Amino acid sequence: MKHLLLSLLMTSIALAADSNVHDIAVKDIDGKDTRLKAYAGKVVLIVNVASECGYTPQYAGLQALHDKLSGKGFAVLGFPCNDFGGQEPGSEAAIKAFCTENYKVTFPMFAKVAIKGDAKHPLYAALQSAAGAEVGWNFEKFLVGKDGKVLKRFGSDVEPESPELLAAIEAALK
Image (cartoon, rainbow, N blue to C red):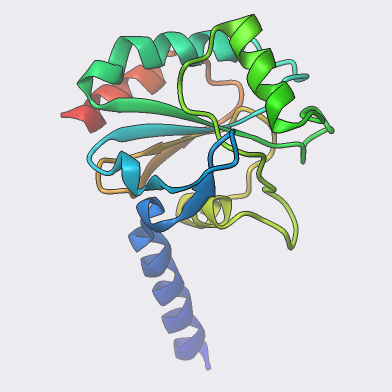
């Protein structure tokens, strides 16, 4: 029995490590169906965002990061979520307007996703499985390599300009 449980655990760890976010279907902020396969060959930073959060000013840093590195094969991908403190209550149109007007966001934004509970979006199920931990709040960041595999997870308190995050992105771009 012990060997069976260990085998199942090792299999689930291997599956999580092998999961590829490029295969996941999503909707963009305008409601169009797409797949993250559009970002194959790029390093991406997937961030669960919210307009009414204490971390909301990170939009400025995320946009600066996107501007600085997008020419090198990097993209920030924003996924609004209302699961943490109800801090993203608006519609996709309202979110898009807020981001554009207040932070001049041009990086790709997507439709709202659920991160917690039974309605968890497949993207966040894969990200959390690969990282081995649940998302705890808004503005958590997942660095995904060119091959679609999660490289590292960063907490909400890690600023987009932090040396730790920048070093990880630069390493992934090599």
